[in-house]
Length: 430
Ligand SMILES: Cc1ncc(COP(=O)(O)O)c(C=O)c1O
Image (cartoon, rainbow, N blue to C red; front, top):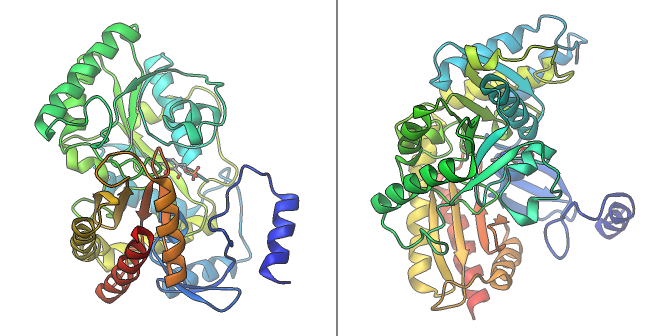
């Protein structure tokens, strides 16, 4: 079957709202390290990693071995009604790494479910369904997760079990607070938080949920320290802080293991997903025991943290720590960032370059303005593919290229990608 035939069959049987990348979509049939091969035998350097999920890259022997070992027991699944050794081990490691004291961990299959679980315990603990969320956020695809998603393209329904009030995003190019320097921004955002609490809530809000760097939103990050400044205000009324670390966790940002650590604060709850399974469905929430235990009915996840996914998760986490991939993300990310900044100096269609570690975004605008240019972004995107580099797209206006390569990325691969990207931007700008 050709890729064209597969595409026709895909379109005939899959829902229309599930997007495929590229004018000519790709079927990935093999992968090794940071490279994948499509059905035509073309090779690509993968800088999106299945949306920041293939955190170690492809075909990692240690992870394969751990999964095979579990398969060889004959047990793929037991349900959480029985003790699962590797689930307990992984929970212990994540609890210790979380920075949250007396932590409990609940495993789920996706980031959406992790956020649902965090919202469940936060709203129960506070006996309130009032939530603070951030504009331009993305938190998943359930009703509650969509309800706290501040991004029109990803808000597929207005049905919402929560009462949500919105804080400003930290977009530096557009919006009310965009022209402020970082200190002024923090002061203005804190004033705004106080005003929102005073005008849009009854005070007894359950929680604020925020991504340390907005992923789908185009890698928009607030100034360091903002969450800490917010927390001082939240603490006055006992409002909890949830850090959605689905994209920012596990050292991807280089300087920190968790995105929240840039903010001088420890959240009450932290959600994780994507990278920890390196492709196996594994996600969850960590929180203080007094909050995470706040469910007074039976609640469980049939597949959450099953023997296969947690066998993979333990192997992924051990590999990550043994190879100090956080340090690699910082080192190789700095090379990429410097190269991208040069690109911004040379081409007026590059409106901004931002990010941390191996989470980097390039925003495209009409030259001399801050007007988003999704068409130029699409041209660069297709040119990158032609040159052998897979990247992602995002941002409120679809004008941000997103790069979240595996944390095992080498310096040579970073330079190779910069070469492809440089040509792609030059072609798109011509
Ligand atoms: C920050 C963030 N939270 C939650 C989710 C939802 O995760 P999932 O797609 O695994 O449900 C995503 C997915 O992209 C995300 O980026």
